Length: 186
Image (cartoon, rainbow, N blue to C red; front, side, top):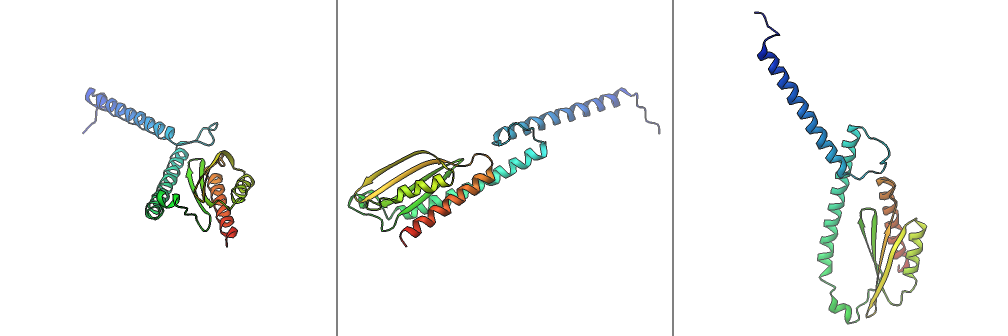
């Protein structure tokens, strides 16, 4: 049996396969490009190979999943713990016996909530000092007083260079602040 490579049906079939493969490659290229556009880039000047882009996207998705789980846990703790302290108890003079600190991570920003009694005058100042020592850029700081309780809110940014540096800086800040609050009233 002899195969005739000049057969018009055979040529048409080969052309169709080439066209299908080219369309598939173009479609994959467009999908890679779209995925790459959704991932934040820390080294935007360098061109990144396709495998590195996929690895970066996978790492980014893992970090998002970790943050989502942490936020779900935080939400659950706030819902279960939030039912014991409401506005009515705050307005009747409730004040915490020890300062409480909450740290919320939002991308490259942090929001720190510090709750103290009105007699703990230097805790806020020492908190700001620790943040400056850790290289945080404080964007905004405010407070309000209800009864004998002072509520401080601090918005700051930390280490936008790489995700690893940012994560380490956030962890270090959280550890130092929690240790400071614990040591302040131990």
